[in-house]
Every structure is written in structure tokens, then in C-alpha cells.
Image 1: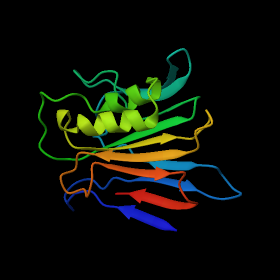
Image 2 (image 1 turned 45 degrees about the vertical axis):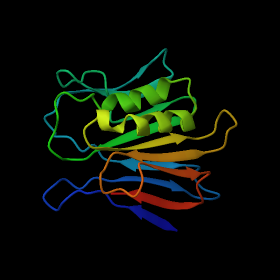
Image 3 (image 1 turned 90 degrees about the vertical axis):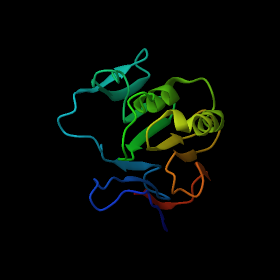
Image 4 (image 1 turned 90 degrees about the horizontal axis):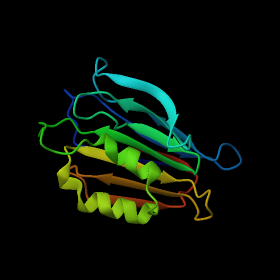
Length: 169
């Protein structure tokens, strides 16, 4: 089963995708994501951090250092960020901290997704996929949080996603 969620990207903008797959009797979870920034944007290669409980690359863009577009924790949290290419407001917060903060927050995924949705206008355009694989016994949960003005809702929750393929473009 395939489910698609469209963003407001135009044909002139970079096409970006986040895809997650849950297949019965195969892999528990597969995630495919592409980084949608300019290739010359300075980054730091993936490394372990937070007492080696998390892994991600890091943005090195001045004033955005320390954010990331994709990361995972040994506790089963995964997050990836897709920027929506619209005119940028340089006074807004760095979106990459949404990923970093999710990986280390003590808040559960429900609380974190709600907070991001409440603060969504503090950031330039984004779609954020938050995943908790349920390693702490809570069951797998997936959220899509966005501030895309064309989205039906700022938060979409998949409770224990059905086996199948989900794609966000």
C-alpha cells in the first residue's frame, strides 16, 4: 500500500522526498531521505554525539551551526527534515534544531510533535518526519509536522503504521 503527501514545491524547485517502508516479515523499518540543500552548503560528516546515543551530520552554515537534516538515536528515535523552498526570513529559528532536539528531548513523540506544531511559524518552511520505533515499549509512531500553508493540517500522525510504503514529496 502506498500513501503520498504532497508539498507546495513547484517544478522549478528541487524535488525532495522522504520515504519510509514497513514490511511484514522483512525489515522492521526502512527510511530513504535526500538532503535538499545546496551541495556547497558547509556540513560536518555524520558522527556520534550526546554521549554516543545519537548519530547525525551537522550543519555548519553560519548562524545555523549544530542543526541537522537527519539523525537517529539508539533509543529508536529517527527524524528527518525537508525544507520548503520559499523566500527565507533570516530572523527565524534554524529548522535543523527540530531534528536535533527531538533526538534528545525527554518528551514523548506526541508532546514534541504538538510543541513543534504550536511553534511552526517560528521557522521558515519545513516538513519534519518524526519517528519513534517503540524500543521503549510504546509501539511504533510516526508524525509528519509541517508549516506548509497548502497542507491539510500541520500534524499528521500514523499510529503503528500499517505495513506498506509512505512517501512525502
